Amino acid sequence: MERLAGRWRWWDRGKAAPLIYLAEAANRTERYERAAELLDQLPDDDPMTPPALLERSDIQFGPLNRPIEGAETLDRVIKLDPKLVEARRRLVYFYAFTLQRRKMVDLAYDTVRHDCDLPETIVYILLQDSLSFSNAYKENTRWLRGDPDKELFLVARALHRIRSSGVDDTEDPKEGPRDKDGTPFHRKVVAEYFAKFPQNLELMAYYLQLSSTSGDVDEVARLLSRAPPEAENDNRFWRYKGWLHAAQGELRQAKESYERALLLNGYDYVSRHQLAGVERRFKRLEQVKALEELAIEGKAVQRELRQLEDVANVPEGLLKRMALYAEKCGDDVVASQLNYRIGQWSEEWSGMRAEPAVSVD
Image (cartoon, rainbow, N blue to C red; front, side):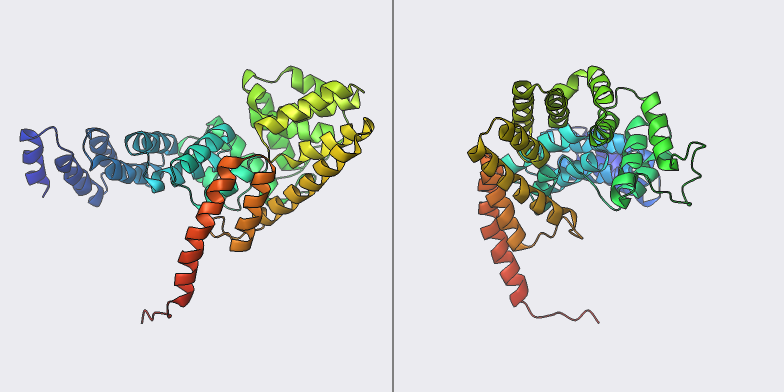
């Protein structure tokens, strides 16, 4: 087959098929580098190219362990075929697992607009401030083997370790010993990374959370003064600005900061709760009631989502709550799509329940 495909390729260089057959032959004989190289040469205008590039990303994420290149391939697939659901699913997943929040949210909304969303797509949007996956530590560890010094994987692995295990000041003897001052090993690692990558948005947000929780006004001010330009479009940083202004008695500026945070992410129930506290100091009790009720609902919905065993399998009742919550938060894109999807998925679920069990013996 390989010889025939090679001849075909020689006299018809404008077609994807001979390259695909050559790549398949290389893949079967574990010549993964060659297979990826051949698939990279596929012409953009051939309808066989997008699904074949999806196979290329499999090779890059799998045996070659080059996830950055795999993500670039998926991005190319989406540009060639915006309706290819699987490419979108994989890339959103990769962005979520590597804590690339902005890219994840932008792609998730684009996926909704292209009518290519799955239940997990909406889950990622709602949980953008608290991404946590039980297997993200393991995945980032594997990706690091192919690129040991990559900031993206180092930081994502460290923060997912803390989030998924619910640890912060606790110690896990399997990780390493405490520092001389009693600092747990994982906290020591994060501190080392922050010293090495001082402009990393996720590390900065982590330390802003720690400092604001402990009431350290000076440290919050210092961290915010060092925030990189991209923090301007990150709701978490506006939330911490709001916290700082409120702590300093600057209520008008605090209100403006919290409102900016909610414009950037309407699902930021923490900002909504803290804005209610500012409105309470202004004696605007009607606003306080509405803000608090929606903040409580948001916290409850997001808690349920975080407890799901599989984000691809969201119960129908929870999907309906998500749709109503999205509508209350002013996200008409997600709310309308969820209401539309619930009808579709309900029919699928009903059909699955009606089907008899099939033996595989």
